[in-house]
Length: 151
Image (cartoon, rainbow, N blue to C red; front, side, top):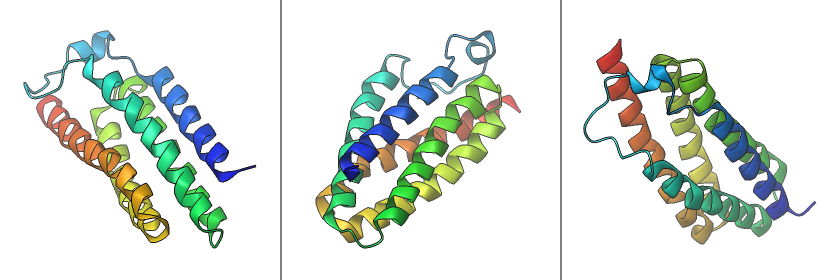
C-alpha cells in the first residue's frame, strides 16, 4: 500500500475514534471551570479539520520521500495519532482533566519527535505539521489550566 494511503487512513481513523470520545456537551464538561481564553466550541472542528488534512498530507509526503526507515516512521505516525485520539477518551469519556493532561504531554513529546523525523525527510512536509504541533501546545496549556482550576 502506498505510504500516503496509509497515513491518510491512520489520520482518518484518529479523527473518527477521537470524535467518538469527545463529549463537549456532557454535564461534566459544561460544569468545569474553564478559562476565558478558551476558544468557542465551534472553533475546534474548524481547527481540527484542516489540521488532520495537513497531518495526513505531510506525513504521507514525508513517508514517500525516503524509503529508508519508512516502517519506523509510519510506526511513529501511528503512535502519534493513536495518542491523539486517546486524549479525547482520557479527558472527556473518562472525565479526567488529569488523565487528559498526562496524555497530551505525551502527545507533545511524540509531536516533537514526529516533526523532527519529518524534517529529516522533507522540509515542506515538516512545515505542514508545524500548525499541529503549535495547536497541541496551546491545547496543553488549556488542559493544564482546566486541570488547575478543577482539582
